[in-house]
Length: 107
Image (cartoon, rainbow, N blue to C red; front, side):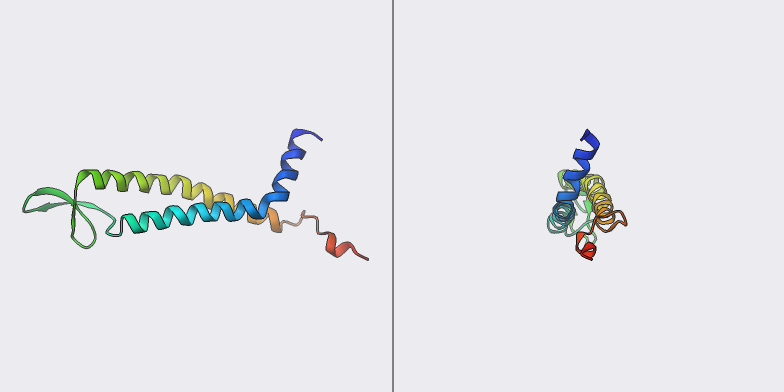
C-alpha cells in the first residue's frame, strides 16, 4: 500500500466522525461569538463621551471589544469556512458513487 491508499483508507474509516467534528467546530465558534458579541456588528459612532463603537442596540463599546470582535469575525470566516468545506467534502465522500457498500452484494 502506498501513502495515498493508506490515507484514503484512514479517511474512509473515520469520515463520519471527522464530518461531525468539523460541524461541531463550526457550531461552537458560531455560538461563542453569538453569546460574547450579542450586540454585533459594531460600527463607529459618537456618544456624549467621544467616539466609541456602537452595537446594533446602540450600546457603546470600547476599542478592546471592537478588536476582540474583529478577531472573532476573522477566525469565524477562516475556520468556519474551512470546517464547512470539509463537512461538505466528507459528506460527498461518504455518499459518493464509488463508496463500497457490502450490504448490497449479498446475492
